[in-house]
Image (cartoon, rainbow over all chains, first blue to last red):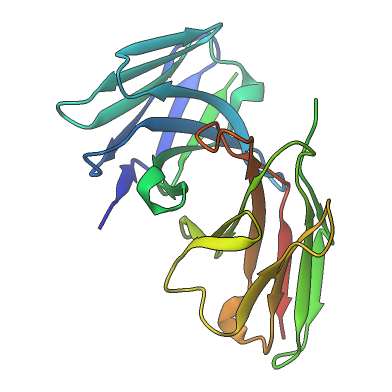
Length: 112
Length: 114
């Protein structure tokens, strides 16, 4: 079945760039998403990319998609302590009611 | 910005009891979803709902679960006879009439079964 995998932890220094990686198995992906979860909070949509795109930039966020390798990454430029959270990659399966398949989440820790 | 709201934020229930989790999706959205996240595990899809019927459900969503849109604003998840393993964070999500737009999530209901 479909699966999404992410590394579990990433630690960076404030001001550095963070790169969070994700791989997926679904060959019919149309949209891929990044969500952010702060402690005790819900899933906040950060950004998303359509499968016919290679890159999408949104302020400090850059999403890169390598469809051949089924690899997605999220780069956060000038990472701040407020960026500390869990980041989830999700793949939308539109021929199955639009369900999202989530990765296990990457915990980003930003040290001052 | 419009948001999805869920109530209650925390529900504690005795095993075997029925529980209803409530969600108010974004007002012009027509696709609705429930997901759950057991502590330390991935967010898992439960069910999607459109045009007053279930579009897709996972194998987790067995006969103990049901969903309903009782009026024009609420979307509910009912668990008939709760089990210890139903303890999890339950998230409601909705997406706009196009159905292929991003799903917006609520803050979740933490369900604790004793």
